[in-house]
Image (cartoon, rainbow over all chains, first blue to last red; front, side):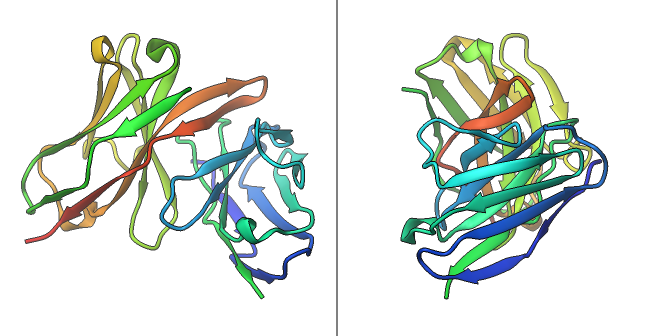
Length: 107
Length: 121
């Protein structure tokens, strides 16, 4: 199985800040990497697919980059509704594994 | 509008069986695989397996192979996740999602609202 490791596991930030979350794969996965946002008590929501493509309806302050084994999710100018847990997920091969999650909290 | 609507919360005793459902609408149900994801209390997301509703071909994560069964009834656009003998450790929220496809791989583009399964004596 491909292991996905996110860092940090948790992060405190303020409204208006820029934050970056990192995801590393245990082997090269090309650009087969997706990012999801999960608000407590809600289902996950697709934010970024294929490493850098913004899902329809997702605000442009979210962006993704990377290829191979190292990827980043950047949120520019944090809004109150962005405080949530973020997961990366590889679709290079089954089982489609997730990172352990990064909890973004209000400072 | 694409929607996946899951069945309601369930409470069962250890050893009992259970089947939960996920009904798709607003798209061609047989054109997209359905996947299932487990989220144990306070924990992260785990991919369990997938099914092609057009022919019911399934693919499981090794962690779940033999412990659950994924099935589908394309005539009613519904996928299922079932257990023959539940354990307390099966207590979790279970999500279904549609497996979308892009130029670079697959993604889970639409999700059900989740079904909470509680297993307790």
